[in-house]
Amino acid sequence: MRMFEIGKRLGMCASFVRQGARIADVGTDHAFLPIWLVAKGVSPCAVATDINELPAQKARANIKKYKMGDKVTTFTCDGLEKVSPEDVDDIIIAGMGGEVIWGIIDRAKWLCDKKYRLILQPMSRADNLREGLLSAGFAIIDEQPVCEGDRLYTVICAEYAPDGVRYAPSDIYFGGLRGKTDSLSRRYFARQARLLASRVKGLEKGSREESQLLAIIDELEKAAEE
Ligand SMILES: C[S@@+](CC[C@H](N)C(=O)[O-])C[C@H]1O[C@@H](n2cnc3c(N)ncnc32)[C@H](O)[C@@H]1O
Image 1 (tube, rainbow, N blue to C red):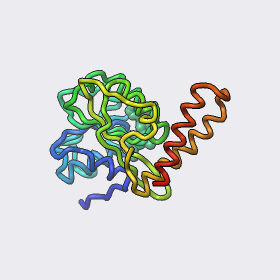
Image 2: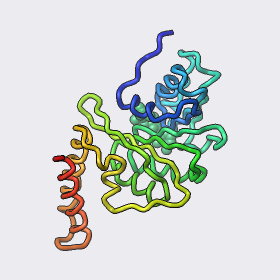
Image 3: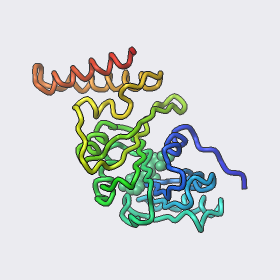
């Protein structure tokens, strides 16, 4: 059977998977990503999980359709609850809010090991996700913006850093995009600046929080112009 193509967003997630890595795709829905990664020979096998029965059924139907039953295993569960740490190398969590993604990582303490790679694509609140990662000692080793249709996304690649991570408050808004000058990264910085500007309006005038956010907005706006 002819293999389908994945879009740019999932393609960017796939580009961070290490050759030969066994993957877990959390919140898999249709299971397109694990099926594709195994079919392309990037991953020898995969685990696909979803918290809801309907998407899990969809995943199982596609796995059967593409004859991947011996290589892609599904679990209906919350996050990584039913995934064995020894069965996976790279963990993909895409298409959910940043806070939900961080909750899934935070509940799986075994991820605090530098052998695992996390590939994360938040639909919103990427700042909350980055803050969770950095404060728990995960290093953001790379991040790439990607545009699909007219929507702009970012894909974060993180690994646990046993010696801890030092970070500035603005790092939770720049993440691994800091220093990038391509047009999508600049568009991302401009959007972050606008989002923060609307958040600042609700803060007390002259407060420490307000002045810190204003300085970050300034930094983002400058990066957007570079
Ligand atoms: C919008 S879909 C994203 C599908 C796919 N990952 C993608 O990026 O195209 C989000 C999926 O995450 C699942 N989900 C939400 N919270 C979850 C959790 N805590 N654990 C596992 N799956 C979850 C939902 O049921 C849904 O199927």
